Structures are given as structure tokens and as C-alpha cells.
Length: 259
Image (cartoon, rainbow, N blue to C red; front, side):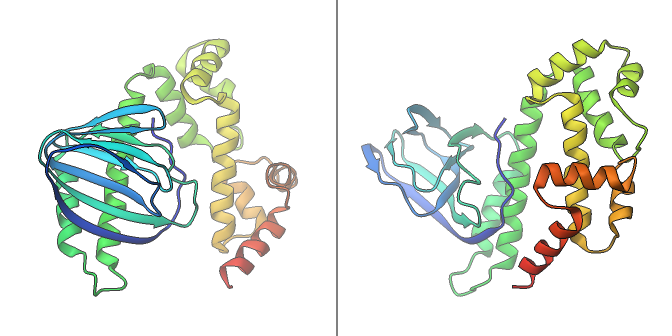
């Protein structure tokens, strides 16, 4: 699965580009990321020691700052989105994926139609680009999870659905799925590189951070909403994971947001 850190997009530009056939060309690392949709033609890319073939309807991604070589094998046309984001390591995996969705092609076309050099904000274009990223992520997730055993997918879903219950634990999950704890642990870790217990804890932690930094709830409320058995236990676990107490973390976040 393509793993991408969530990071705000801070700049983008959109181009409709045509290429004639062209021999192998070296491309220096560029100061932007590139995500493109190939409307026609074929091209070959060599990057990070891997070779990718981009054909009609393929989506191609090249990371910022990485040199690569490319060969245009057939006359081509692409819609290319060049962008940058807040965190420099957010998009670091080159890829070419075959697109089977008309929706993604429509979104690339719409991004080009809406983009304007004169419009410094391009809010609508940013919105379309986030939709493109969401579509790609959903495609990647679906493709990856098609290889995972149904009961393990169900286990992940059950954890995400029940984490707010402080009485919910892996024993409850095992009993519902009617599988052995050792099987669940082994298969879950194989699929997600994390144990079921660790995943349950991480879901609670991520949600605690999200609710905490919203500044709508007290520490006690956050603990209760995220399935911690007591406020003191929540504070202990949170500090172990982040190095800060929930209150200190909240204060630092709000202080940074107000800069």
C-alpha cells in the first residue's frame, strides 16, 4: 500500500502537456512533487533503482528532489499537477498505477480547467486536488486490503468501531470473531505491521490528540470519549507516547496555532 503522511498542500500549479517521442533523458531532482494523469501515449521512468511504465490512463507520481530518467516511447499527453506540501517527507514513494476510475480522469480535467495563474488562491483547484488524493488513497487501500484475510479486515473494523468503550479489549474481539488470540496477533501483524493491542492503543491515542486539540473538551471528557478507563491512566499513557501531559500538549498546540 502507498503510505503517505497527511500534510497540508501549500502550493500547486496545473498543466496540460504534450510530448513527442523522445530518447532517454536525465531529469534532475525538481523543487516540487509531480502527480500526472496520462491521457494518451507511453513513457518509461527509472527512479530509485526501479523501472515504471506509464501508459494511457495511468497516474504517475514523482517525488520532490529525486533525480530520475525518462523515455517517451509514444507521443503523449498528460495533465500534470506540480505541488508542494508543508512536510518535506510526506510524499516520498514514486509510483505508477493503472486508473480504472473515470472519476479520477474527470478530476484531473477539472483541476486544469479551474486552475488560473492569476488567481493566487485557487481554492477550488486545491479542493479538487484533495479529492484526487483521496481517490488514489482509497484505490490503494482497496487494492492492498484485497490481499488481507476477511476476518483480519473485520478485526480492524471492529477495533475502529468500539475503541470508545473502556471495557473493550482484544479478548472481546477474539470472542466475537471466534478465532484464537495467537492467530489474530500473527495475521494482524503480518497485514498491518502492528499487533491488535498496539492498533487499539494507537486508535485511542490518535483520537485523543484530535479531540484534545479541538479545545472543546476537558481532559476528563477526552479520556472518556477515547475509551480510557480513568483520567489518570489516560494522562500516564499520553505522556508516555508524546512526552507531554495532555494539558501541556494542548497548550503547546494552541500556542503554535496562534502564531
